[in-house]
View 1 (cartoon, rainbow, N blue to C red):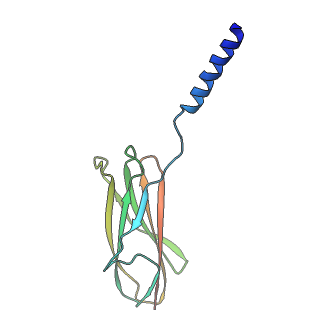
View 2: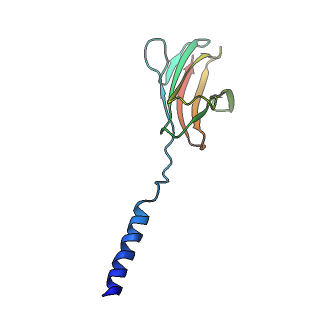
View 3: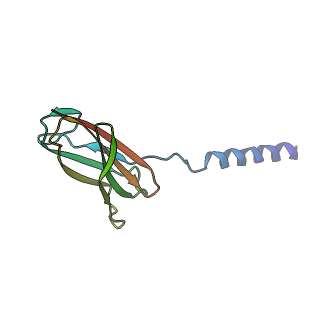
Length: 136
């Protein structure tokens, strides 16, 4: 009888230990395009040499994650990547979100410009938005 009770107690301890473990699922920070008048927030074809405004809204995934960096990379005509900006978010900025507007001057020649915006948190988790502008 004591062996049965001991087995039941041991089983309960094992089940509790397994179910009480911290979830190790990584949640990436959130990133969105600002929408509305004056903002480009989707793929588009525009006149070469245009000036665009792309607004980025980021939010941390949980109250314990801190946003650390927002980067902007452009690829011209599928040939090479160029980092246009790499904004370091101060570590003492314990805000839930970070927003930034990019003013972009498109090239004066026809082609394709692919913009990639990536937000990072202190654990290295990242999330990305992409936007393609065709100039003619």
